Image 1: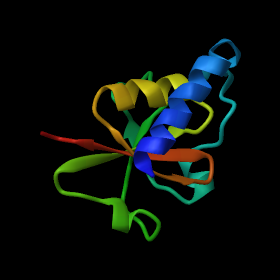
Image 2 (image 1 turned 135 degrees about the vertical axis):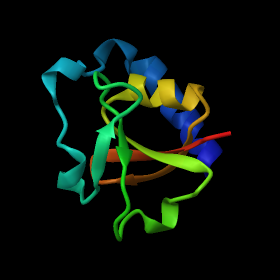
Image 3 (image 1 turned 180 degrees about the horizontal axis):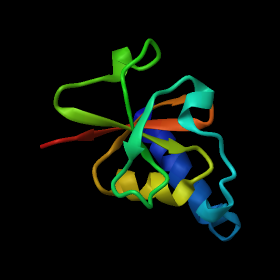
Image 4 (image 1 turned 30 degrees about the vertical axis):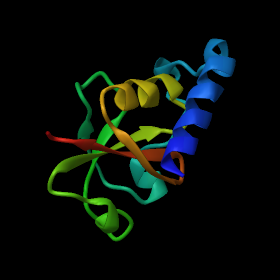
Length: 104
């Protein structure tokens, strides 16, 4: 399931690459609007992805060997960057894609 989602996500990005939403338009709602706890932008303050904190929606996804990251579902480039850097698709919660990025 994870591999097929990754393939579909990357295929969709190739087809819609020219129609991606600009991050400066803020075309997505904050993680809190989807019931998530946004901790801080990831990997730097200027990025749209966020470290996601623990709550009832995320407790099953937390791992002491990985960082839970959320990216707006509309931000294909940001999701692709994180997956290219080793993050794996976990789930979609509201407007946010959850990714697990191993520390090691």
